[in-house]
Length: 124
Image 1 (cartoon, rainbow, N blue to C red):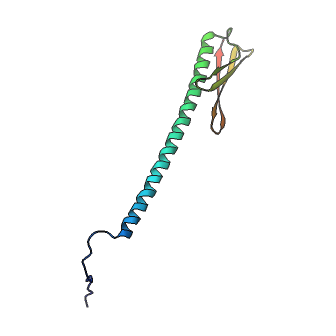
Image 2 (cartoon, helix red, strand yellow):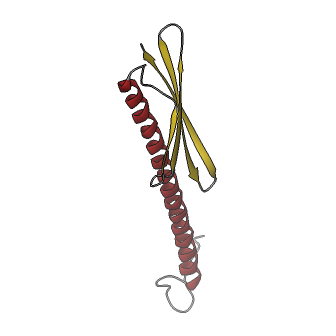
Image 3 (cartoon, rainbow, N blue to C red):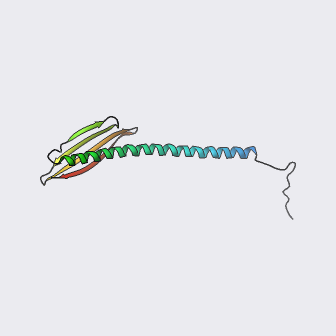
């Protein structure tokens, strides 16, 4: 016996208000997810940029110290207020003709201070 799905009264055309509201809620949740992901991406990109600047500053300092040679390589420090970077480098001559260099670069973030340590050596 076939089942009849006849509508009583008018034929159904379009969407009900409930269907429209459910679609709007789903769209709002999706847009909030996209906004949250975008905010996270911006924060991570900014953190990576500051870390890259710190590492580049340290690498530049090590190259400068190597270019000066063993006799002129001395421990020291520097601050870059514009990039909010603090540097400290120490040189340690060894008896076998090698000067070891430790370069520490610090920068401030909203969650505290971050540090990167670079090590190198100069052959004398």
